[in-house]
Length: 121
Length: 108
Image (tube, rainbow over all chains, first blue to last red; front, side, top):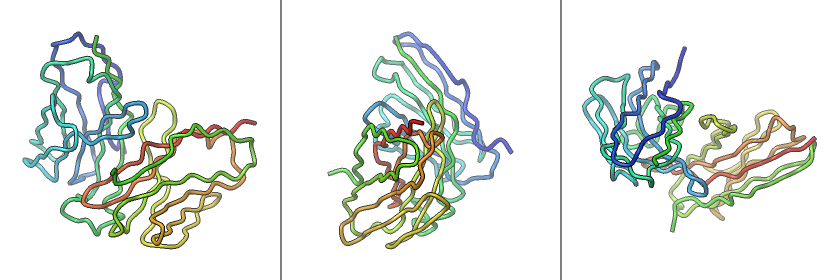
């Protein structure tokens, strides 16, 4: 069972370039999310999805787009990369959504991918 | 005020020591608490979760919640070099709120 798979593992971009970070899960999880992790800042939520066709913004959405056409995939798009987007990006998924099912503790446990390390020059 | 606060450390202890990692939270309505462990260059993985107040034990790890103080703790007994990692507390409240993580090093 692969769990949450992120590609690529590393990426270097020039300012202004665009790219898509891929995330796929094979656990039939309803909820998927993207975080960025920066030194001293912890994990900050970028975007999330409570199911196919439904996405919403987290706390730091600017400069990023997402879509959820299937249950399995949740790509993150950087439209015009900026040095401030240099970070480690993590995709996570859970069986149910903490938004729509806040009482479902065990089902809201989020499983993380290994991360994508992005540098924007 | 952030929903959850965590001292980032770093914390360095000798093998065999008892480690105490702590977080505070702001909303007294929060009832679900988790601890994640993150090894270097890896994604976070769930270590323990607990509901409401009290203690939960799993081997050398004990999670404790004090709702009156809005304080959560993770204790590691007989710490091992393999416990060296960053530990993140997380609180479920509409979404998952993470602390900044505490970097722990256990030296032989």
